[in-house]
Length: 270
Image 1 (cartoon, rainbow, N blue to C red):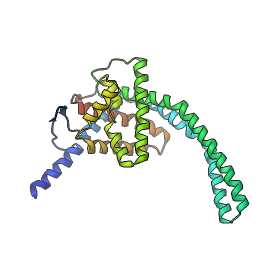
Image 2 (cartoon, rainbow, N blue to C red; image 1 turned 120 degrees about the vertical axis):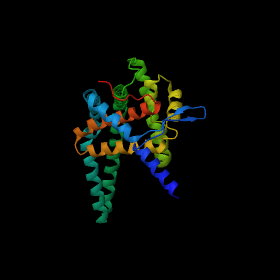
Image 3 (cartoon, helix red, strand yellow; image 1 turned 135 degrees about the vertical axis):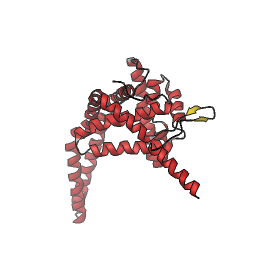
Image 4 (cartoon, helix red, strand yellow; image 1 turned 90 degrees about the horizontal axis):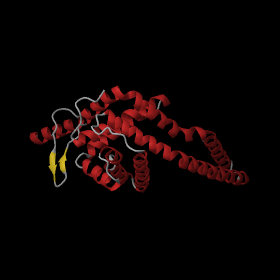
């Protein structure tokens, strides 16, 4: 009983980055599988972000602008929709059938208009958001000490962006079907863009590499993602705070990728 308790405590400490962790273990035909230490990962991410915060914040700032643009542009339409919905509830409370029919027709028309505008903004802005996300990951990967710092061609960036956007819809569909498979798929595919950037793999090869790298580290990666989400949520108190939070979250993601590859530097490059 005592040995089991000590073993459980050691595993929890290793997961959080406290105390010694296994350097790696041999998987069946998968090469070395490194155990991620979340505390050490955040330490590398913080040191990297402290040195590369200017380019990271510039890219994440542009990304934040395009992500928040639909909310600003559609603010008045959303406000009108809320007012109409409130009027419908008022008419229902007063049992005014004629008013309910009139307001329902108005609400339906507003919903259709808002849906068309949202689809149009998504069509225009999603490619830009995808490109900026890939560029941010490239900068974050360089910040944590990528030895393969060569520039990628415009065609390669576009290809990685297309794969990233397709995977976003795949993971979103999985979330809509069921939350648990969606979370599982999100974590298993979290390193696909970085594998394409760093290892110069195609889409299929990057999916296989991400799936293999996350094996044995699911709960640690889930903890890392929840911590990143917490940082970004806390930063949403002010729009400006989202910019460094987004840059740091992507740096932490790149740091986890490098640590799982087993070649993370002791110190990030200047």
